[in-house]
Image 1 (cartoon, rainbow, N blue to C red):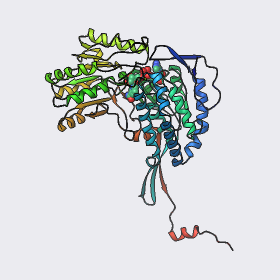
Image 2: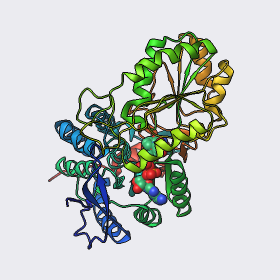
Image 3: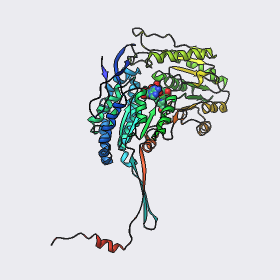
Image 4: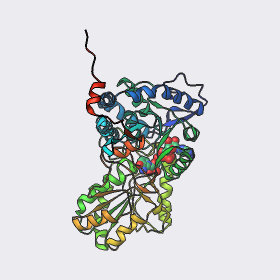
Length: 499
Ligand code: NAD
């Protein structure tokens, strides 16, 4: 059986004792295995990182940016192959895999301009003869722990910024789809990044704990589910590390009575069901404001959802593919049942969906549930599948309160033609990323990504200036030089002439 090994530059990996299966979501079989590492494997990676990092940090920022530029070009040249590799392990359709890679690539593009944003600050004459300046220096060795749902984008959110700012970076990707991270490590080497600066270690909780406890790792960036994010944050901070830990989500789409419903339905089909709902910025809750809006929206949603095509990852006509594992499929189906038991009306039921020729694949049909209320567990928890819940609100105030009071605060969107309502909503809602007529408001790479409440622990976001802040420390120098006239100085530094 094919084995996906660690990608560490420090020498041979000790005998691997444990493996996890990598499934084929389209057909349900096992396609490969991934090595599950431990503290010994991590030590090898840390040793390689420690050896390589000082010289990389001392490389001038423009040269580092050139490596990032070559890396960007290599990703572009390998886009198709990377997308197929990603889809085969994750299950998302090829167009979504390309989107995943593209959003990561945009962070790499941001890092091509990093010399500019790494410039420090300077104050001349802060006191008599005193100047003050500050500089950003890398943390040293950083680590990233990433989820299954964006195996290209999220490693690049962290890894590209960490490396470009002069750190060595050790990635522990999801054990469900580990091949793309390894390929990115190869492309980094091909781009001219020194060995040991971007490495990949695979594993589960054992490897995560080893990272959190390793004294040489100064910063840890995590993205995954909230309970684990909270655990990683607490354990990492207790060990004295800088930690940012992004968690789960349950994003709401508010539909005001004046919204263009055809546009909303089109947006919801993409945002709720695209990538089988396995996106932290998906819109799994829609909140029509007023009875009339709810009825009109529901009437338009039903035929649109019924027209969605579920297919294998390489089906170019499919709107979405299988979910990632059989276990996850069973969880999603259980949540649909829970919602029905709690009193939700299942309008379209995606359970029991099978795809001809792929009967063992992890497919779920699109599901629409109406009359979901705030006392239901299925409303409070993340389902992370192709399931759209309708929670009806009577008025604007109720619509603002719903996402604001929810335990998660990743993203939210309002659909309206009323600028005042949109402005009020954006100002008041208790959520980190807001869309106005934009269903998936993922900030562009030079802004920063991050939610609020249980969607993120720690106080810096991913990429953009927040990412630069996370991966660097500020050092501030206050300097005073001995007095004397400029004339004396000129004599002191006179260059001797020959003869
Ligand atoms: P997950 O929490 O199961 O896994 C994330 C990482 O944690 C993986 O690398 C995994 O190996 C590791 N891990 C798993 N169990 C662990 C344990 N007990 N102790 C230590 N480490 C452990 O998440 P997932 O299922 O891979 O990804 C989906 C989740 O990620 C969803 O909740 C989704 O909302 C969230 N997510 C959040 C964002 C964001 O930016 N807020 C982005 C993408 C995904």
